Image 1 (cartoon, rainbow, N blue to C red):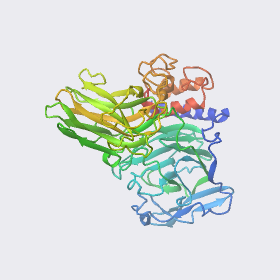
Image 2: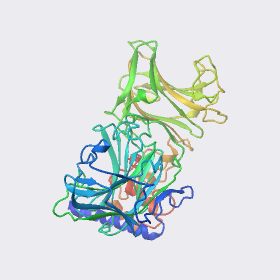
Image 3: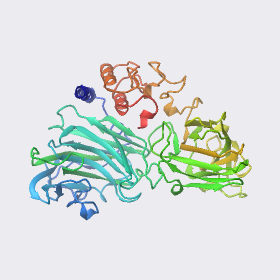
Image 4: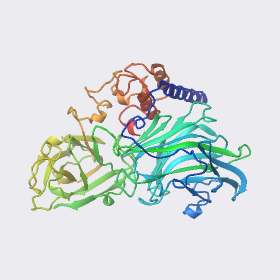
Length: 575
């Protein structure tokens, strides 16, 4: 039964992909956008590899500081002789020719120093090898390999990986986190139409912008990632620096397993072209701004600070045991303050991170307060009015500070002690000009009319009101755009499972259309929903029109594939 379900799913995905390709509308966002010019390409029209664009990597990996077998227990020796350019394509050929320890040879090339980019669309049209042990890849590594630490703290973007034993399955993956073995990964997979990997060309691409990486096959969006981290840099590190391209065909290794008696040699990974398009650095969106998602797991290395008060004391740090249900990622910040039973100023913490607040409307954060405690958090937005990217020390008078008091307690008006994770959204209009510490500036918060500076720091000051300690976790500090003032970001306004009169909810199940590809309402997005969707494709049925643009088309298939095997709701969009 399980195999039958998998085959049904593959068939549905294949039919949907084929229908998209022949609909004439299946264009990825960049290809049809005049703001995405072609900036680099190799069409492989010559008679040899263009060494102004590519460099061969030779050997077993040891000469590049990698373990024998290129860090993956691969079986091949890479040479300069296994690439051929002819008839408009590049062939990377794996051979059983007695070269190296295992007797296999192949090729690996990279654009490092000849093609390096931060952000863009990276695209390849290729035909993949089909045989046990074949492992073709189109991928990216940081040009400075240890800018945030050794692999994978500095990141890796796998645009396309395939294994010869399952050639219809395509993998797109991010590697990040700490240095090995403290690294992690996230990604998605896509199944080509059955049998088409054998002898057919397909186009594989990623579109990489600040805070968003999207994977496409034949211009069908199948995976989106907007959350990752590096232990040595703030989000969007490590994916905010120059990366370069790699093409290789490995033989054997950890992913495909070793070549065996069934493996066919020679075997080609054939590439028609590689193209790079420029993309705007940032994703057009509602304008939400993440101040800190805590995913760096190293607050004091990323602009955070803490300070003591007149009573008690405490500190902050990173923890991975408790994270919010949405936007949680892998890390959150803990905050612990003792008062010695006294009332008054216990201390505080914050982060320096200059941020333009024009056009945003709310400050948002998650908090998880311990039970049985009562205290106030003075949330201070420190506004730079003289344009020097710093907050002047009193009594300079050049900048000002805006404050909101968040009351935490068993019946707290802002957050309930012991109530678990709570998302707090505060209108910026509720912050008042606090002249008790910073008393300069123009008295106008940057986000409002007449603001002439920018936010530099957010500071949480802990005020003991009952003599209890103040212990809480916090995560994902951000500024959001909420044009209708309902407390829900415009980017989630049609995507929320909380009461929201404004959302478009065609099936009236409490989940807005944008986050609700659960067409049969069984609380999971699976092959049953794919079957329903395939019957509604190219219609105007509002139930399957997830983005509410009046049509059920390739944009909707991108959303349903992104959330496949997930639950409806805001968390499914970015994970």
